[in-house]
Image 1: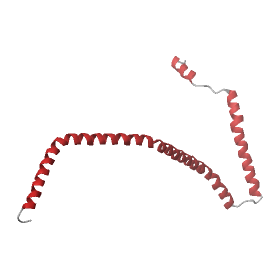
Image 2 (image 1 turned 90 degrees about the horizontal axis):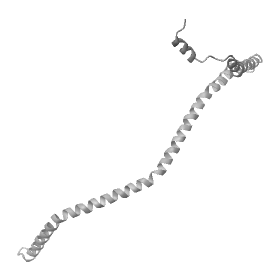
Image 3 (image 1 turned 45 degrees about the vertical axis):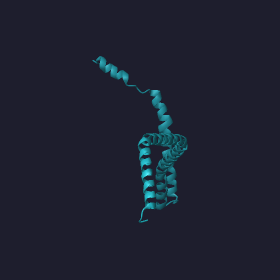
Image 4 (image 1 turned 180 degrees about the horizontal axis):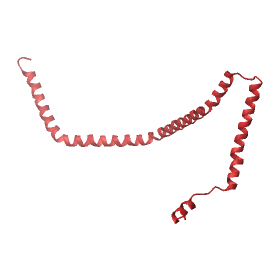
Length: 148
């Protein structure tokens, strides 16, 4: 006797429809098997007719085996091309914000320089006047000195 939980589990599993299974067989498995039989028949006819050697069949198999690798390579190439295009687009967007940032940094530097000059002026002007006066006195003293 089944419990309620077992009934719920069975109800949650989808049961394959017989018609669906028939459609899958007709649309997928049958054409695949039919193509494999045709390929085997073509290979057998060519082999019996002497139209091929081991080397030729090996070369053909190698080409067929290389097709998936080629597809993977093309996908990687496409991804790289898309990445390159994206980088080009981003590089095209950079100059305007960079120019604005450079202007802002220039304004900040100019204001900082102006403020530093304003702060240093009260200390520098008296020192500069004192130095100028002392240099002038030394200059006149050297003109009137006996050694000169």
